[in-house]
Amino acid sequence: MTTSNPRVVIVICDSLRADLIGPEDTPFLAELGERAARFAAHRSVFPSTTRASAASIATGCQPARHGLLGNTMALDEGEGLICRSAGHPDFPDRMRRATGRTLRVPTLAERLRWHGETSISCSNVSPGAAYFQDPDGHGYVYHAAGSYGPGRRPIEDPASALLKKGLAGDRAMTERFCAEILEERAPSLAIMWLSEPDYTGHHSPLGSPQHRAAIAGADQCVRQVWETVRRLDPSGDDILFITGSDHGMETVAHAVDLDGLLIAAGLKEGSGSSDVVVAPNGTAATIYFAEPESERVNQVARFLQRENWVGDVFFGERLGVVGLPSDTAMRIAVSLAADDRINDHGVAGHCPIVQDPADNESKIGFGQHGGLGTNEQSPFLMIAGGGFAPAERRELTSLIDIAPTVLRHLHMDHDDMDGRALPHQR
Ligand SMILES: [Zn+2]
Image (cartoon, rainbow, N blue to C red):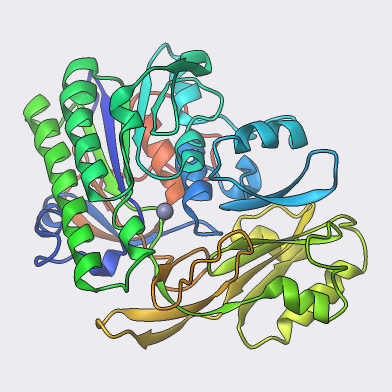
């Protein structure tokens, strides 16, 4: 199938677990699942954090190739390794200072610009997650912390400046996305990234009335975009519509002070030292070494393998198995031990988290993600239009398959990515 005016519209519902989609809370997505290609074995990347996921959706590559290794990363900007939040608006500049660049492979926004086409992204999650869809400013990115046009030219955008995480902000963003972006500006690629149900999931128990209301609200936002898309393209031939999430969530069982454990074991000099630096990523952590070839890496890995809160430890060649690089200062990644216990609201899956010294809020009993637990690794994905046949699809798919699927619809090259363009039918 070819179309003369191909466009792609993507809506991400941050953190929405595939198993929480059902007729009661998400009547629209439940119905769309019958009318679209629904990918039932869709997986997140590792760490299963929003910022690494945003970069993987944008590049079609694993973190090993795009280089954003989680929600936090240790960077050496000349004063030794220091753990930084990739969510902070200044992080892309820090990354440039420390490594000479931001992402190491082109984004969808850049690839579209090569062809003279435009991408527009509206995001209500962290600034880092918004900017890592297009860190070098090839298209438009609208976000409360600052909006940018091509050339990373700042744009005065009062509508975005007013947005706050949560349902009200998501609704306002959806209105604007449908009326202005989709109907008027009609770019080749338009992406909208909702803060829900992630925002509420991090601040309330999974399956609680608040969390379910957030899920229902996200469902309504997706419905509104879908109805706009169908009005613009009743046949579904031109506009490829993709909706999904970046990862799921587990319930936080308890918090582990990994810094403290390493210091007590004599494996790290002290609090804030840069010899061994833990980058907490929710239910996962990555560990950076000032001397990455030293025996200390093996000592820390052996220590972690004996801890009962650890699910799996990746170091050496095994980092590649989970899509992480093995030649950077980050030498160990750990996924914490998830289990299938059910919480008070009937939602399965618990996991400890690594305590983040930069964040003192208690997370116990609320949702979190980052690791390889079954539920946090179960985002949803549905694709309609653009030649996709309605069907439940069982093949294993990943966030990295989205970008090549987008580019194929836009008749652009996509064979140099880690992911693959998904077949139109099974
Ligand atoms: Zn997320």
